[in-house]
Image (cartoon, rainbow over all chains, first blue to last red):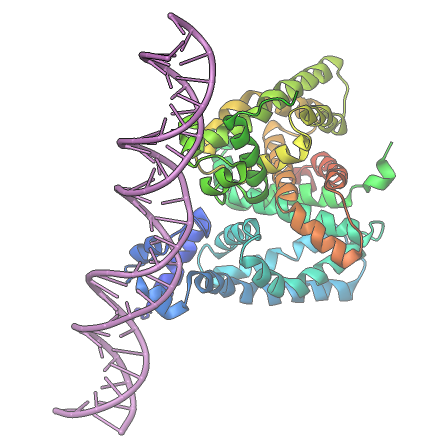
Amino acid sequence: MAKRITTQEKILNAAEALFAEQGFEQTSLRQITTEANVNLASVNYHFGSKKALIQAVMARYLEVFMPKLAEQLTVLNARGNFSTRDVFDCFREPLAELKQVRKHGPTLFLSLLGFAYAEIQGHLRRYTMEHFGEVMALLLDTLHLANPQLSPVDMFWRLHFVLGATVFAQVSGPALREIAAADFGEAVAADQVIDRLIPFLAGGLDAASHSSTVE
Amino acid sequence: MAKRITTQEKILNAAEALFAEQGFEQTSLRQITTEANVNLASVNYHFGSKKALIQAVMARYLEVFMPKLAEQLTVLNARGNFSTRDVFDCFREPLAELKQVRKHGPTLFLSLLGFAYAEIQGHLRRYTMEHFGEVMALLLDTLHLANPQLSPVDMFWRLHFVLGATVFAQVSGPALREIAAADFGEAVAADQVIDRLIPFLAGGLDAASHSSTVE
DNA sequence: ATCCATTTTAAACATGCGTTTTAATTTAAA
DNA sequence: TTTAAATTAAAACGCATGTTTAAAATGGAT
């Protein structure tokens, strides 16, 4: 009664695991096909190119995550009178929803997103902007409503600072957790990193702008 | 009376410019030697390998920056009674000092640091930790003194969130500045990104810890 | 001026990459 | 069962990389 796993799925599963661990550019098709026990050429047969494979891996998560996030943000906007913290909490549920895609979906997705953002200079940039664009704009508007004292351009920059910190925490998370465990004897689960991160991000976003703090 | 520029210097100058723009792995030795107008093999002759060249490029800045930073932090610790903002301000002077190394030294160095941190999974990690280790520990202690309400392990994580946001702002800075200019009609110089960043970071670091904000 | 170590040069090497090709095999419909 | 399409398989292609080799050129010291 075990579900038949197609070659495409075998490739996607092996690819996403290796991508999340090493990044896109550092992972070769030969690694992927070896791990998936399929022929090298099958990647180009089923997906056309490595670029297309990367997009397919991302799409599997984005198509679940993005609508959910947009929905949460829309609800919050309709409610009105909310804080920065409320905006960030909109991410929790859509992220948890990714467990349905894959067991460790939330963690995998954040790692993938991290590498995608890190390699945004390359071919992923256009694709990312196309799919992130409108949700990003909605997020930007929502954050602006939560922090009307900040100008839109200030909010733009701070949102990207937030993304940078998040992405980096995720990408270098394993290494940092290892160091933290060694230096403080305190093991931290991957999920708890986000709990540490959110107050930091909210505090940064809510801070007074530079123009009003210049001495 | 123009100072004689050696082949090694020509290589270092061309390499650092390309590294700061594209990252280490994305820059080939052929690009570097073409830009520097030297022979391809001269890199391996003078530096031994590409790895060693990368370290030489970083070392030129680290050897100036790190002692200056340690000095500033030591002075601040001796003074006592300081804020997070004071700690961050310790970075300004050592960074400005890099103009003596190179005209656009501060910007170049931050970009290089960003890529180094981003590629920390590779061979740069050990080298980075060796040279950053003790200064990082001093920085951590100093930040803890500025924020005694946070536990050391909390501070550890927040410091890395800070580094992540900084690094990312630098690495993806050019692309973001382009977008900001298009969307807001507001051109932002590279230096001003740091002015936007510092209040954000200080606000994040000073935020209440998660344990006291859990609902 | 000669000699020897240093440096520069051109060429080739070995390796890994994404992709393409061509044939074999499997699958499913007629 | 036959037939045609879809899939898998093995091999090679073309290209770019870091590195090495061996000869040529350079530059001081004797």
